[in-house]
Length: 105
Image 1 (tube, rainbow, N blue to C red):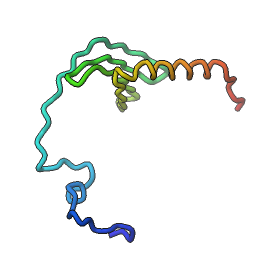
Image 2 (spheres, helix red, strand yellow):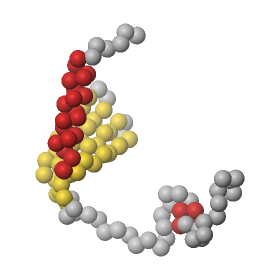
Image 3 (cartoon, rainbow, N blue to C red):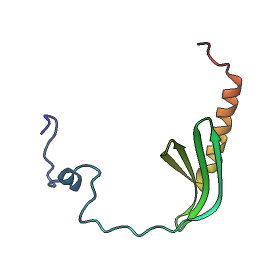
Image 4 (cartoon, rainbow, N blue to C red):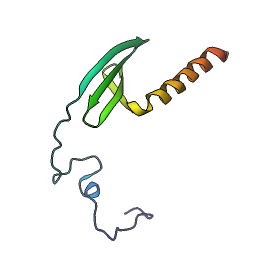
């Protein structure tokens, strides 16, 4: 036990018993969530591929942005309720990128 760890009064947690990220043998498998793709587009910038997919499931609409670099994928999901704010912030970043001169090496 690490010196700053204290035993929990509630006993061991499942992640402590099986290792963090390990599947819980007592958990029921989740049924797959049906997602409808409303629109999808791909964009390649340098060596990165970006896939933007507007999707819908029973919980609502969302934008899934996937970055694929050499087979490694990272994804973020933005609920449709935040898309206008996301666009506003992205527009501000584009303006800042165009107005601030690059630093000399």
